[in-house]
Length: 164
Image (cartoon, rainbow, N blue to C red; front, side):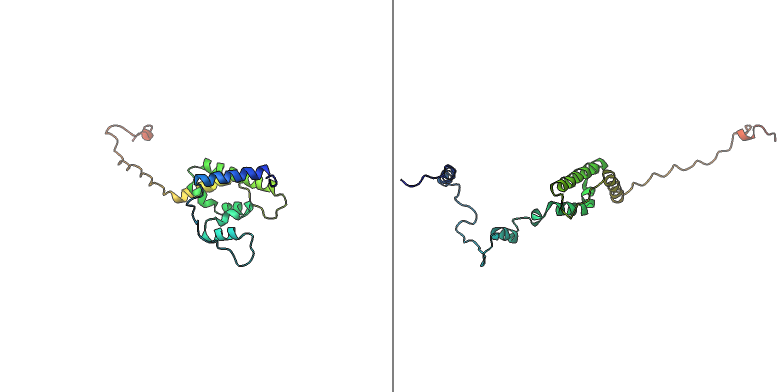
């Protein structure tokens, strides 16, 4: 009998054998096709390949601070889609909390994302929606009635004290 297998390795081997017996590995995409390996040694060849064919979003690989700064730059588009000033305040509060979390996790980073005041977000939301929603035509005041002559024999109130 040979050397004993590590229990963890034995458990993984057993799980693989059971999956193969069930057919879990049958008809996988790319089965039977050669791997596109680079000519030189590249430990990240599979990531680069996924980036090249578009199966990995390049933005997902950026540092959090860069993603937050990009989100801040596009805040007007986000605010335009929100239904109310209250939603804009809540969004700004959530954004600022994520900025502070990133700052706490990386206290020595030199690039910082800006915090965003809730009231500034609400004011910006109001301005954006004032521009985008056309104001309804204000109804014209009803036409003024032609002044009617006082009935004969009666005087206007401001002339009551006068004789004439």
